[in-house]
Image (cartoon, rainbow, N blue to C red; front, side, top):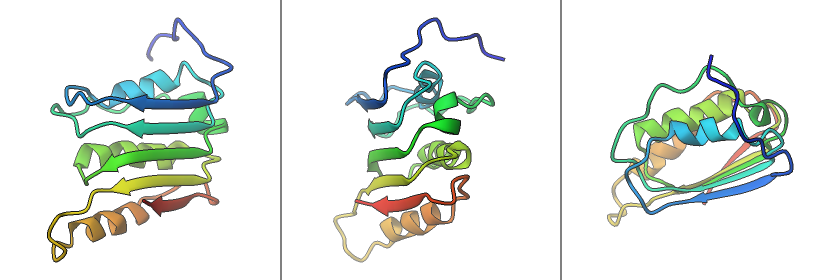
Length: 136
């Protein structure tokens, strides 16, 4: 079991994480959510990481179970690790109302990978029966 976070941001209800750095591992995002137990809105604007993810934590951040209503991921191109993180969010977010995903389109219109990514996203199991998945 991971140690209790040293800092807690109880009044933090909206968070936007932005980075241009490709040298990140996605699990820190989930680990940080343990510090924001009342978070309702999460916006991520992160590039595809250069390194893989560490295993996703077994302990679910309280905000996912009780408060998180909106997640917006601005940049998504179908990376398997990002699918894993999105699946974690959907699987544990009990009150999630909307997951907005910015799907990167290929320059060639004939390439069906963005459509495949949308179909795969829509097929992920959800804990919240009110959750809508919206592509941007």
